[in-house]
Length: 232
Image 1 (cartoon, rainbow, N blue to C red):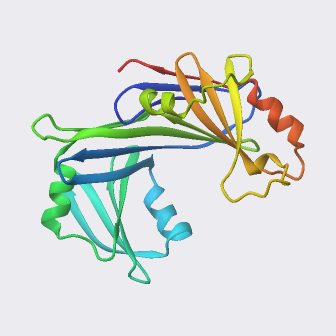
Image 2 (cartoon, one colour):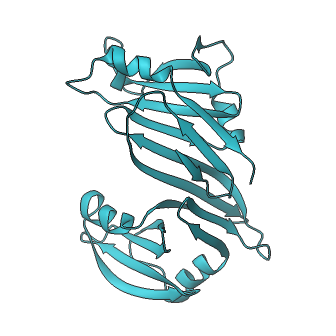
């Protein structure tokens, strides 16, 4: 998978077998002063999928911001509002607790962002006139019958690396850590996170528990993973 991260940098995720890419999403968070807001970037249809399968919500309003449509959906129980800016290829989503902000505030929220949407990914960065900065970003690849590979920014990734050496893989090292709340006797691969270090990236891998795929095969799949960031 070759995709463009929100910052405009490129991320390549490779795996050795013929497993298919099921989905890819990205996330980015901007901060500045008292401001802080996170966004998720998914392919077209992401808003409808989220408001159907994750939070039951109905479309309440539509706006136009910078020649792009913004869809506002309110959860049926009133607990949250899902707002997405629709690009040609991707959607930029954020979630608010309770009712949606005013139209003026929503317009301002998206107007301060420089957005370039291409098939390879949506670049989303603050406009130079703002005092906002990128606090974090990541790219997530979901692979059929295998699991997910989450790739944080280089700075964030370095903070995830343990000080001790990991087990060698074909392209780097891997460390296993038990997920929070998992009993010490649990042994299935779904109970662990696998931190992987490479020369140009760090990734966190979560493997799926599958009836027809043995854990040994899933663990072997880790050996063929390679991830790298490249320039903007």
